[in-house]
Length: 260
Image (cartoon, rainbow, N blue to C red; front, top):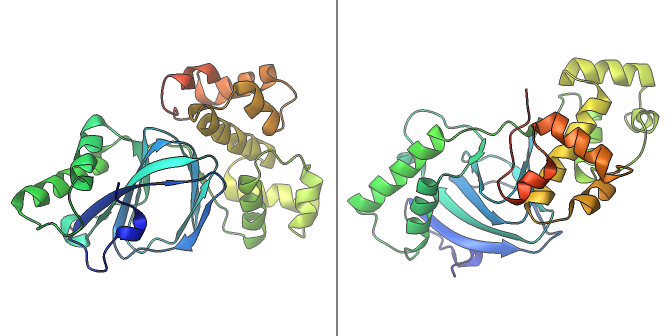
């Protein structure tokens, strides 16, 4: 199996490999000079950019444009594939950061690229495969479960802390103090920036995190307890309210998109 460490200094315009990380590993904030496509085969990961946070599980993909500052935090052991794509293969239309369901065609195209050596000749066939892959990513159904960060740096600090520890049980007064604000100022500014109250936003963080963990194989009871719910029943109610399906359905499918 090809690994990240094997990547040459001057690879072809499209190049891919498979890799795995252990749970708890954090790939600190960094950038690539090419666009990065990641497909997740097993496990759960949180990817943070400067303005957004994405929680991904098996069967899902993440596209990041070149020079996007990002960080990956492995919630569980993680198996994945990565393809780096030169800008010459993307075309003039910008393809922004995107989390999507990986179709069988996308998976097949990625497998074909990964099967090549790192030093292959970029012939007409491989150019066609790469361009088709980019087109399919562009067409892929976007998943809406990204979590936006507020622009206010105090609120952003709080949101990042909660995403890092979704089961944290501190109340709103604690987080207002952490932000250096009065409670009323904190709640008003949070609603203004995020379009929802603090409690609703934190519930969303928890159920999105829960969806990823359940899809990765963790038990519903354990996930509910870890994320601060008193029992599996109350957790299941909140989960169904957000996704429109029971948490048990994730044992047989990828993570659903939240209801609008």
